[in-house]
Length: 380
Picture 1 (cartoon, one colour):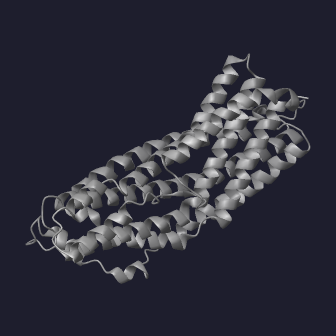
Picture 2 (cartoon, rainbow, N blue to C red; picture 1 turned 30 degrees about the vertical axis):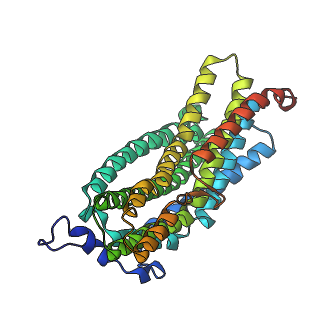
Picture 3 (cartoon, rainbow, N blue to C red; picture 1 turned 60 degrees about the vertical axis):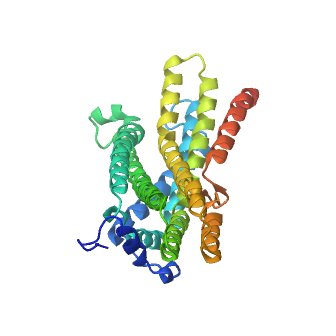
């Protein structure tokens, strides 16, 4: 959507909204995601399923992966990883409906905010830089620390001279497990990249919308301008709903994975409460496991805030009270903008906003205070 060079900045608002078609809210344009890239989640799902089944068998026979005497810590780690891999496989196979992502992208791309608001460009550029840093940190953590866990288990077998011995075969098997772990986490990182980028675009689009409201402040916008502004906001709402339908299951998995990491981390802390090195490693692992969840939560809260940030500005547009039609238009717009129900959700049950985060933190503190009472029962 390119404006003619003769269009002035003050006219760009009218031109921008006049190009929007309300009928596309019900039949949105489709922006097809690269079909080849969809192989990544499928490969990740197969790898995750294999690793989850393998770790489940290890837990059921109560043999730690180190093949030494049974240790409760090894069983705890294997149980946590087993749940994580099985959950990842379920999401990769059944929780990614790409048609919702295509519809969301089609609606957002049709708005084409960067041509009209430089704030959008600067916002997206900054947050994409943050995304690259997060991807770098998580990739280093997963690939160089977490996935090499399988490979490093029996590294002493690599120097075994008898390459046909069971030790060499065992090492090759662990090498395969490490490779599958890399493939599994590649799918998780790939989905995070898509979800985070989608949240960035939606946040930038809402900021663009808020800026247009501010630009109208102090002026006398026409009914056509208000109508097209409502249409623009509806585009954003529909795009957010479609994107939430795509991302809600992965977001649920991330929260469950983070909660399980927290529970098993607490268990490890109380078991090894006298080992400072182990305690530090458990805390670092939990922080890395929770990094993606924390970042997505903060941006989701920002999305929920941006959708009704300029509510007071819209109210002030109604102060002239020039006509009944004008007042009705503003009231309809104000009522929709005042609803605090826009944003990503946890399985379409809870919207990710401050109240939800506060509930999660309260639950975490309650578990922290209660779990010491169950430690003697677990260690029996």
